[in-house]
Length: 580
Image (cartoon, rainbow, N blue to C red; front, side):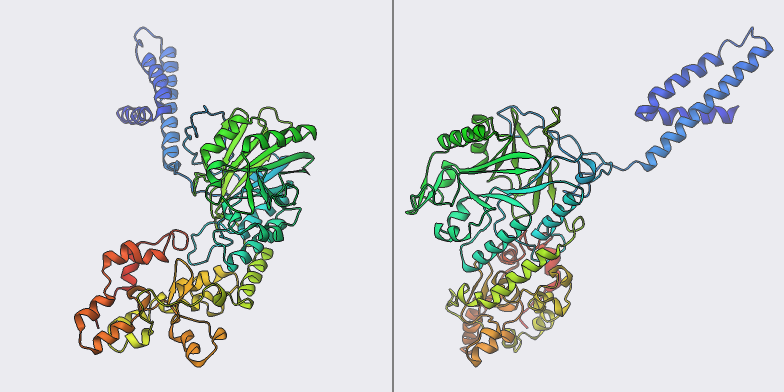
């Protein structure tokens, strides 16, 4: 009985420490105590029955204790989930007070859930919602943890189609970040990808307008429409680009889409002699009246506006079911629900192609007519898509054939006036530093742009070499500006484009990320050394760790291309103290 009493005490203690066990153990303990008292005066048969019931109570406590102990051992501590598609759940579309942008987000469950194409009922229509790609067609491949890319977006679309869903796409705009010829080639490549993914429309933002109306006219090829209800080109309302709105049939629904540019955003690019802007309010009233006349069932506004202005549109025009806004958070929380004003959803889709918003439309479900999830395009959750790899290959071939290295990255003198001399020249005096450098990834940076060389991570290039891409070369060779993708006159030049023997030497001489990318071009340093002015020579190329940490390494090791970069950790890989 002593052993049983001890076991009973431990069991009660354990179960009472567990929230569920508190309730169960209390009931069993009361049963035990009731049975333990008052045996005096009982008959022998009653005592036997009472003893049996006490043993039953003891077994109950022990059973609860064992069960709760197993629960404690197997319970997974809840974690904040990564923005993953493979483990995702729909977000509740609860109405928000108008003065609030977001409602509190409940702690995510630690229980693994199905991807939306398995978890959600099949919608009548699924819309892929994206925006502000800013020229990021594919991850550069420098690290494995990069998000996004058109190839993974295509795989997401294919997974939805394989589940029997009708899928269309809408983009709020902001496809490009620059206006160079390379940016145009990438813009055209992106349009081809969006057409393949059954996109319907693109809103025109400041980024598109900077590419100039005549160029946009040349690229507007329906059924992918450039939309803006309050912008006109060349003063001609019916020019055909942009169109005020479009109505398409998809999934048995009449879907109406329009776009406007806000007063705040138009100031970034206007006035412009060939672009006319009108106030958004009156034009949206006109578009919505047209939607009424044509019995549009789903109404979407692609809002080229600040989030605050988009909120005002959602409140002023409650006829819209969905407002997709530009100018939102670059990396929004995929677990957070979208804001809702009345019956209108306000959606942010993130930037740089890292996320895709999926909106499921259920017109016959009065309780939940929409389901929405912002999906992070992670490498582990999506496959590369052959058709998008082909587009990437074609893009790189166009960069080579059009010699973009020469046309866009026009050679200019370095601001210091000095010229690049190459690491071999540096090695004449700095032997120890050279011994360190030649075994680093920096020394083989150019090689890593061609998958044939099979450098670490070459599989992320998907067989596509990038050795003629200025946006890649700028951080993988010597003598380029990594922010502007401009080649300095004495910097690296592909041998194919060299016009004389001196230029041909620049390919091998400046390959990889060498000393002068950090210390500056070395010709003046050499002149000062030869003049025996060693103090001035040292000042010419000296770089402190603090300088490197604050303003140098981050030019290439930024959040987009090197998201896991840690200066102290990386410095240990290339550390070269001293002057020799």
